[in-house]
Image (cartoon, rainbow, N blue to C red; front, side, top):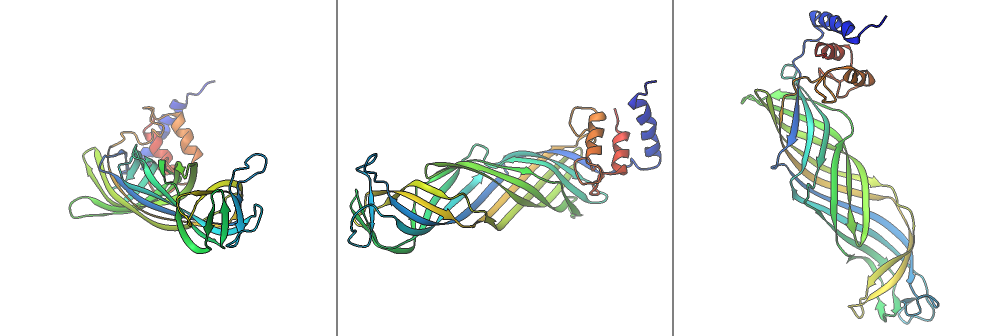
Length: 346
């Protein structure tokens, strides 16, 4: 005998609705970031590096290359010179207009607020700027080809070639909940910390780079519901400093050091060294202006126009935890949410 799933779930949905389990005031809105949204961010990275550098001279393969020798008078041969430095890239995003989407869950009765599935392109076609400088310490040495004297320095900043940030995205990494309070004008003030993964890519000093890091967008603002549409105006401010694991050591990395006495040339060196743990400090302000229509059937998690076995499977996969299938926004997927899904079945 074959039992159709619909024939079983239909009466169950009616029973749950009769018992009050399926009653819900929570709504969902498919929000889209508007063109007045903005991102301003400055990220400063510090990576300490210590080791030696030596001229790129090689009697066989590069006989006209640079040679290095310690002290004011040099001596002979091509000799490694000890150094310490910190590499200091600064990434700036200045007034870009991000694009993106998210699902807003809001219950005007319980004042529960949730954000699901936030995805944002923070640059949206407007590249960011990357400026790199190094903070150097070394003892006096001479270079030959070009002939120059490098007087010993301590913590002197030397600018390097700039670059650009071509990719910066934020993707929500976990469910986010908050509570709203009513304003006198009928809107609701809310705060929701949204965990995200920030992905960036670009180039600096002629080298490509890409990285991912966790972060939190502490959205604070207002929700206004008019008819079947919600408007969200919010701002997220970040002021964070975090450790950066040391990258792999560098071995014979080509490095151009601008000459000082006389200026105007470049000593072509091969740099080797070991990184220590670094730090990254981020200061950002993200302003979100978003509008979204009410989602008629919030249990249609995959957006295919029907509440069916696919949506039920997603609910069961998230059972006992917060997530997109938490239809009543109480922080956990359970029987109450199952009842609401069954009430929308079909």
